[in-house]
Image (tube, rainbow, N blue to C red; front, side, top):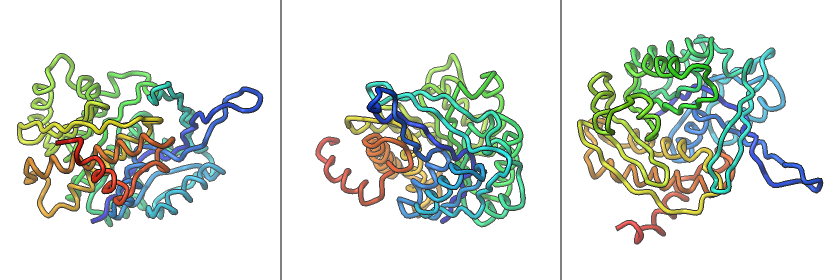
Length: 323
C-alpha cells in the first residue's frame, strides 16, 4: 500500500524561549500538513511519497533532507530556482494552542502545476492525499483540483483534510466554494468541529454530516474535537471516541498525526473502508487519538510524530484509563 501526498512543505518558525538579550529565539521546524501526514504514514509502516515544491534554497534543501531521512519518497519534490520556500510563523499560547502568520505570497509551494512528475507519482500510488491550503492561491489551486480529479478517475482512494487557515484566504466564501469543488473526488474527509460548521452553517452536527454524505460520495468523515476526542461518521452513524488526557506543550501537527494514523488503520485493514465495523472504527480512532496526543508532547510537527512502537507503548500504559 502506497500513499502519495501533495501540498505545502514549509518551515514552521516556532518560539523556543528567549535569548540572553531577552529576544524571542525560534526553532525552524519542518512542517506542512500533507508532508506531516506522509511522515506519519511512514512512521506507522506504510510507504508514502510526497509531491510538491520548495525553493532551491537553504530551507528547501533542509526540508527535502528531513523527508528523505524519515523515509518519504521525495523523487516528486521539485526545487524551484525562482520561488522561495514558504515560512509559517507560529505563535504559541501558554496552553500550547497555536496561531499562524504566513510568508508565502510568492512561495514555491504555490507555484506548481499538475506536471508529468506528479502524474507519475499518483500513478505509482494506491491512495492520494491533500488538503485545502494548496487551494488558496493559483497556480497550485488549479493543480490541486486537477490532481484530485485525476486520482479519483484513476481509482485511487482519496483523502482530504479541510484544514482551513483563514489567514491564507482573502475571501472565506471562495475558500468554501473551492473546498466544495474538491469534495466530489474525496473518499475520506477530515474536518474539525469548527470546519464542519463552516461548510454547513446553521445545521446541527448530525444534519451537517448527512448533508455532506448525501451530496458527495464520501465514505468516511472523520471529525476532530481537540481535547474532546474524535469521531467518524459512516453510513448514517456517528462513532465517538474520547481523547487521551495529556499535558500538551505544542499542538502543531497533532491533527496530521491523528489523520495519518487513521488512514494507516484504514489502509492496512483487510476490508474496504465502507465495510469497516463499528468496533474496527473505534479501535482506529483510539489509535489515531493516541498518535495525536503523543505529538502534542513535543514541539514542532514532523519531529514529534510518533512511531508504531511509541503508539503501542502509549496505548498499553493508557489501557486502564479508557474503560
